[in-house]
Image (cartoon, rainbow, N blue to C red; front, side):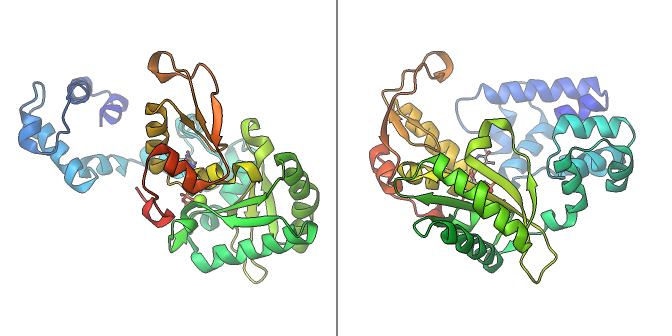
Length: 316
Ligand code: TTP
Ligand code: MG
């Protein structure tokens, strides 16, 4: 609400929201009711109502109403296109672009964004569970034609038991294999083969940071014209436990288990659980620490002292 009022140059309301936010931040207990909110200096009736609404419903009607202007709607539309971030979306809106057609004809799109616009409806559709499995089956066959010992595992929301998924996350791994071995099999053999088969429709460029350990793209089943977002994740055998944990998510669960690790002087990431991690101010890591466990997902829970949570119970 504060940023909405800032955009509409309503200074008085902007300031009152800012004050309320900072007063809320300073509370040591969780504010759950209107009465608790009213007891805080700087929070009046109407703000207290909104706080209670957020706590009880998880949303705020008034905020949802702010997306009623054409600019707000355009911004939200552009932000939902694959490959588009807030800075780019805002620049397009400021230039007076409002529709996907405007983007196609008037914007200077990257290759990823062009695919995102052209396949907008496809990528927005949820993917039924059986279809996720069918995509993985095609990938698995191609992978195992190249190396019979290589395995594929579907992670993400599918592994958490979701009936539909936003994309398809496929881990490719093999005991003893390095990320280089897996990457070269996938990039030199599997992807070209699946492109020739017509299953892979497009490769999407990824940020250079993760270039080496994953491939992003789009795929479609032989009898269907709907393109799906698919990620192939290259996981060395030694890291499979930590990678399963990371790529199963969800992101909120990941955040809390990583925080727990850091409170115990350890560090958890997609490669492993590390101990003897030195931290300075703001918990910033001063060293990498030494690897305690990477291979076994259950062992990571044990070492952290957390009872095993099956993937279906990680929907936080
Ligand atoms: P996603 O595929 O983005 O999420 P998802 O599979 O849980 O849900 P969806 O059906 O919408 O695809 O990412 C897969 C997992 O990777 C996610 O569950 C947790 C992890 N992850 C993070 O921990 N942080 C992140 O910012 C992202 C993008 C993913
Ligand atoms: Mg996913």
